[in-house]
Length: 512
Image (cartoon, rainbow, N blue to C red; front, side):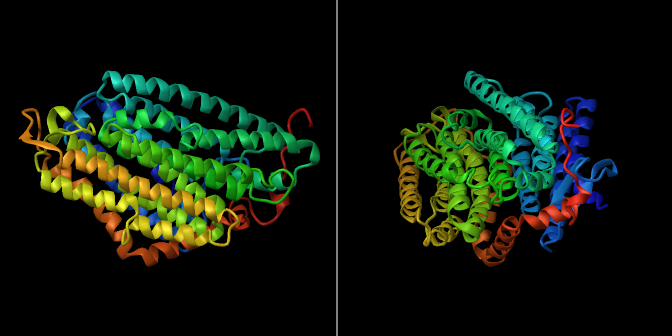
């Protein structure tokens, strides 16, 4: 076995346990947490190198073969997501080490548990363990959202916890229902069993599938269950919100696995399960999130709505563009995660440079380091709005081109182009209020951002720019990833073998 595959889960888990045992010692906690996250980045780069060959890697915990044991699976998509998680996590952690991590106890342990849950969700090949890793990352996120306390965080966390606990309950019901019918929860085996399901089981399988789609929609903040996200993300501390930018993509990733593997067949149980729902919901998500960004009263709230808009754009590509659209959606996924993480960090720096006005979208005092912050905001706005020569522009161009022959082309083109225009207007409004309509006097409570705070922001912005420079190899990778996702038989063969008899269907106890 290649034990490297289990390290993205084991490494943060052991680090978190060590940090809990040693107690809240700032210097020790920072050192251990940063070294562990840096090692995670190295491991994820090695895994991506292996995944780029196109070969699947599987890891059977305790050497129990699928579908009976717990299986981890590495393919192009999971390798990409683990690397993206490590990049965002390292930037967010470095920013938190400039002061946020000292505002409460056990920040670094919670941060590592969050990474464990996110990486586990990306690598697991088992539906029940996807539920388990969801709970790990959600429990850590509950605590991180409250980090630093405050009335706004408390109010937002109550809504966040309530809706996600409801989603978790529905997830467990759906998983139980699916297991009672199919006798397995291994994703690859489920794909085979669902494709061969008898007519008597079709109704229950489709019902559980729709429940799972609803749960993943909650995690991804898909319309109409996205209303919890703006308050939660805009209330969280900047480094936590930056990490949450990748956490939202766990829901998107789950929808991708759901639609391209388990329910990707043409049988009565899986055919057209998501087709009538996914594209309209994605279009509504993008449209309403853009309107929310246009009406935002705080910079962090604006960026939270842009997070939702990114989910809508990705799922439009997934549902309307075929292989080419899926490739463009994956390119957009990488771009949006990097730039939105950078913007969350930048928003707090702008807020502290304004003093009393914070990041409220109204005229206020002149900013400290106004030229630097203004240039950084301009670069971020150009990228996230999708102006030409930006990574967002390239991604949206791929998505629009993929939908040319689609019957839904007018809806896709109209929504994406309209949302881009409104996003540009919203960002221009925010920039003019904060950088132009000033009182020409700095607030007495304003604090100038430090060079160490600038480092992760500049790094993430630079990666967004580099996506344009290296667009060709990145697109080749996303093209190959899309092709791999659209051919689920390779995944099934890698996990349970070529012969269906090797992984027999497990019958419920009553049937036996």
